[in-house]
Image (cartoon, rainbow, N blue to C red; front, side, top):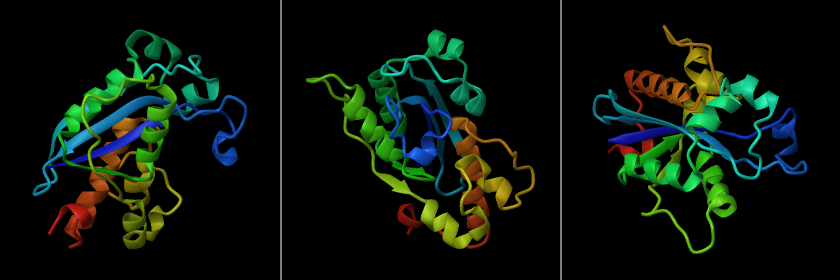
Amino acid sequence: MIIVFDLEFTTWDGAQDRGWSGPGEFREIVQFGAVRVDSATLEITGELDLLVRPVRNPSLSPFFQELTGISQADVDARGLPFLTALDQFIDFCAGHYVLSYGNDMVVVGENLVLQVPEGRAPKRGMPPFVNIRPYVNSLLPMTRGESAGRIAFAAGLTGAVDREHNALADCYSIVATLRHLRALGHPLIAVEG
C-alpha cells in the first residue's frame, strides 16, 4: 500500500509569489486529502477528505475560497482542530509511504509548530514522506510548473479533469499520472523494488 496526499492551506492574492511572507500569512492547513492505493495494481482502496479550522487566520480569504471552492461556511460547519485532523490522517496512513506532488510534508511540519500546543503531540509518529514531483517532472516534462490537480491533464491523459486546488481531487490526478507512468514501464521509485 501507498498513500497519495495533498493539502490546501490558507492563501491570499500574491501570497505564493511572496513566499507567504506578508503580515499574518501562515500556511495553515484547511484540507487534508488522501487516497490509499494498492501499490501492485494502483487501485484506490480508500479515501480521506478532512477540513481543518485555521486558528491564526480563522477567516478564509475570498481569494482562497474562490481558488479552492472551500467556503467559510464549510470550514465553520465541518472543520476539525488541526491536531484531530492530523491524527486521523496519520491513522489513515498506517505507516505506509506517503507520496505528494511537492513538499506538502513541509507544510505539515510548519503546522505542527504553528498549531500544536506545548505539551501536546500527534498520537503517533509521522509516516515516511516522498516528494514525487522531481521524478514525475523528469519523466513527463509537460508537467513542470503544473499543480498536482493539473498534472494528469497536462500529460494529456484521457478523462483527466482540468480542475485543481481541491486536495482530494488533486490526489486522483496524481494517481492517474502514476498509472500512466507505470503503463510506460516506470516504477513508483522509493516504494517499489
